[in-house]
Length: 246
Image (cartoon, rainbow, N blue to C red):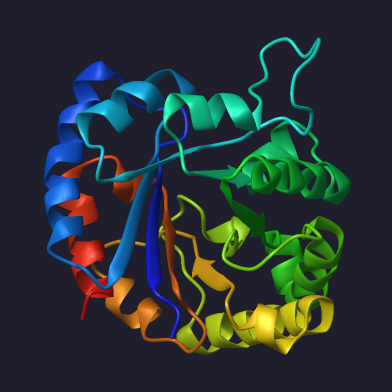
């Protein structure tokens, strides 16, 4: 039985004052012992967040594939570990689009993260054009085959994020989510073998909020959620944690 994971991605939001939100989030996590809860703030807040709530998992939003070197503005996986992070998001659609990251880039980052002792949350998802053309499952399968690290198991999480649903308030139907998550599970079995694939959690991400969390989390093979805007405040995030605990 896979434990559910509710991970919040603060993206380029937050300040030291925002860390007060972690207090209620951590309390909700403690009241949901069957659910893993994580928050991924900007790099500047990771160490402060980990110190403020040492019982709450804190993650990064990206890492470099190299352990060190002349990579101005980048963060190595080991630096995240030193700051107190236990996981990292790699291959988020916004980085794939804005920083032109390829599947090979994402795979290298995931492998570096796992080698450093982090859980790697590997993201995949289709654009609205792909969705309308009926290409969702082909696109997602292709991204996974190119992005998944060789090392996997407990240190690997996959997040399906339909790009057209992120921050738009739109979500696929439960049937659509079930179909894509089943496809992802099939690709994991193909690449990792059934025993290892069954241990990999698959998160749904795309305008998850208090109103739709219960329905989405009830979908087969949805093992949790990668939450964007609704993770910025405890008021919005805690109900999602509570839904996962049901």
